[in-house]
Image (cartoon, rainbow, N blue to C red; front, side, top):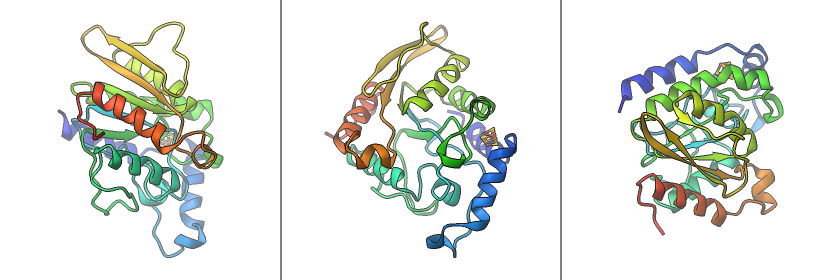
Length: 238
Ligand code: SF4
């Protein structure tokens, strides 16, 4: 476990200004705010991953939300997507509480790290391919630091899947060709020449568009989390 390395990486990510469009957007949102949060100080910077440095399971989303992670400074914290994700993690015994409202709320994750292939909130939740590629080295470094312990990954949504596959390859796992196709419940084993394999699991994103329409139900999400956590050597609750 390299907790110092990961903490150092998180600090470096939080200072990144590589994408001019995203720097401008995240800072403008932090200045103008949403009326409901007018009295809050927004984070307005890149949002690092959240969770212990010896995580056995990594969950990879898309990017922070403008008034969620970009406001609170913690992944999936302070927005509806996060409500769904952390409730499910709590339900399967991988989080200390079902809510995730701000960075000081005491939430702990058990053996799980939550991160994203793009660390800054993008306009309309849509990073450009160039922004996705610019941010990949951060994910590669995070995965390399987690490699001694991480044994499974849940990727939320097709964007995250496409963005994460090359990062897994650069971090030392072998990604099959042709590349595995994203789908809810998709499962691929990524071998590594110099270490244990990684179980890769696809899951629909926890966006409101999916959860409000029933495309992703809490039960579907819990099932994927349980399967991946069990493969990772964690002991999820039934
Ligand atoms: S999206 Fe990633 S690479 Fe671009 S500014 Fe944010 S942290 Fe840096």
